[in-house]
Amino acid sequence: MTVLFLMGSTKRIATELANLAKLGPDCRFRIVPASDADITKLVAVIRNPDDSPYEGGITLFSIDMGSGYPFSPPKVIHQTTAGRIHPNLYGYKGSEGGGKVCLDILNTFGKNNWSMALTLEQVFHTICSLMDKNALKCEPGQERVSEKTLADYDNCARAITLAATIDWMTCANPINSAYPPEIVSIIRDKSRIPQMLKSAEKLVDGVFNTMHHRNFVVNKRDIIRRINELS
Image (cartoon, rainbow, N blue to C red; front, side, top):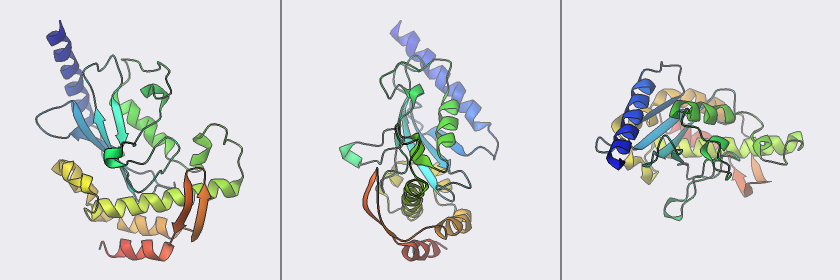
């Protein structure tokens, strides 16, 4: 019975990966196996949405489908080490853990909202939909904060996103070595540089204290310099 269950799980994952591979160029995310040896261990990259604090950047995730999929949700880990970019996306701290992705459908909040009818494609469409302006409103109890508070949070998220993307593109992030060539080619794609510069121009210099950032320094000039060095 266990062998048959695992075979069914593997078949389901393989089917989903095949469907994901058929998504057109307008799809903002790509999900592939981390290696040819095990299709239950996946990696994902999101080309961040335009007109958001995350524009121009990329966001990376590791995915462990586990042995219970699709009856239990996958474990999705946010890989950005530069800090917390969103109330639902914790910063990754390497061996210290972190990287939690908070979604009802992933049962993060202790509720059993996962359904075997859900797919990885739906999970990542949900994550993409969160990456928008006024991200702090996704935090419970912060729905009515001031415009300045929202703007300060988005400013920190923009700076962290750009810094993280620069690190990915320059291979300064040690996690890079774990990714397959297809994902690495997306990470190193220099065609995003103009969009990164456009995003960086919107940064506001200063030292910020938000719900998830303490004494966080934003240096617009330095980030623009680092982006230009990618060319």
